[in-house]
Length: 197
Image (cartoon, rainbow, N blue to C red; front, side, top):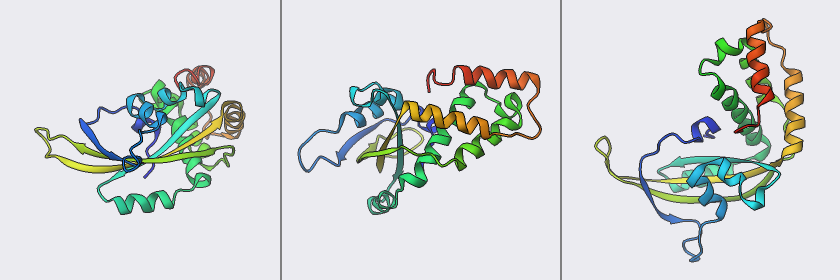
């Protein structure tokens, strides 16, 4: 399961403690990108010096079985998963500007998501993968539990992403066409698309 940025962008998560991670046995720390992601999401990772001029995407999966999570990691394909991550982040950006996107943007919204998902996105570079073991503290609603979270880092050049997104926009042909109000709402998001992207 690849969570989209709207799901990643910081639902209030239950409190947990990291009890182990991929580098624990070697006695080394977690990478900066993992710490930044845990602390503040994709925006924090993109603020790191290593990722200037790049957009960051992180595929993640969480479960209670380490072997199953490892199989997910082994089956991860940047060619297949990067387009889903890009489309999900685009969808989340439009959704963040309008809580009822189907009304606000009309058929454009659904067509945009479909077009972005089907687009042959290129240029993503696969970075590191990492895992952490999380021990969730007990709450009134739930007992203590433990899960594994696996993450895969992908980055792409911002200029290339801009160009590909413009191509996606040109390929969106909604039926029916947006009303004047819907077109104004769509253009407002497009004009400020990368503010907070």
